[in-house]
Structures are given as structure tokens and as C-alpha cells.
Image (tube, rainbow, N blue to C red):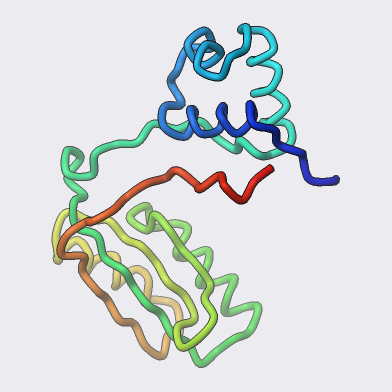
Length: 158
């Protein structure tokens, strides 16, 4: 499927819904300069094209007692498909792992984990390493969150 061409109105819609997915269609339409029906149609087109993948609400980590963020760098000496599938399925079952990446360079995998405290992280660590051969795990605790956004830059789209 060819890439969807995004125009200035599409980009305004995306910018707005990235900031607040709960906007009423009437308010969103007014912000982007459309009437409600054409605005709704554009949103549907963006969903069908896979540009909009989900509608979510962001939750304050402190208020739900997972205010400790840990970045976990994993190295392995085993790079088989079977090992990867086992590790991936293990990680996917750990709800505290909120992001999981395969990396280039010195680190094989990078995980972002949210927990209430070090003891909770230790339980996550033990689950993650129990049945998986890992050569090195390095955990870094975030001291302070300086920037956090889920908004993607749209200057490259269109």
C-alpha cells in the first residue's frame, strides 16, 4: 500500500489528537478549520491507513505508584531465533516493561521499566532472567524526568 499523502489539515488533526485524544469532533473540526463530517472522515481515513493506531489516555505514574523508571540494557551471547522468541515472550508477560527495543551497537536490547521501588524492580529482574540466558544486564535508574512526551514530530510527514 502506498504511503498516505498528508496535507496541512491532516497534520493539524494529528497534532491536536496527539495532545488530547479526548477532543470532541466539533472542537477538533473547529481547530483545524473543517466542519464535523469532513473532519470525522479524515480521522477515519487516517485510522484505516494505519497513521492513527490507537486512542489512549496517559496516566500519571506517580499517582498509580510506578514513579521509578529503570532503563535496562541487555546483552546476550546467543542470537538464535529460538532464544529471541523465548526472551520476547518473557518480556511481553511483564507489565512493568512499558517499552522494549532491539538495538544496534553494544547493547542488544533496551527496556524501559516502571515500578514503585527497587524491590519491585528486583522482582521484575528475576522474572526477566529466570529462564533466559543473558550475558549482561545493566540497570540505570532515572533520577529525574526532564522531558516526556508521546507526541511525534510531524515536520517530516506530508
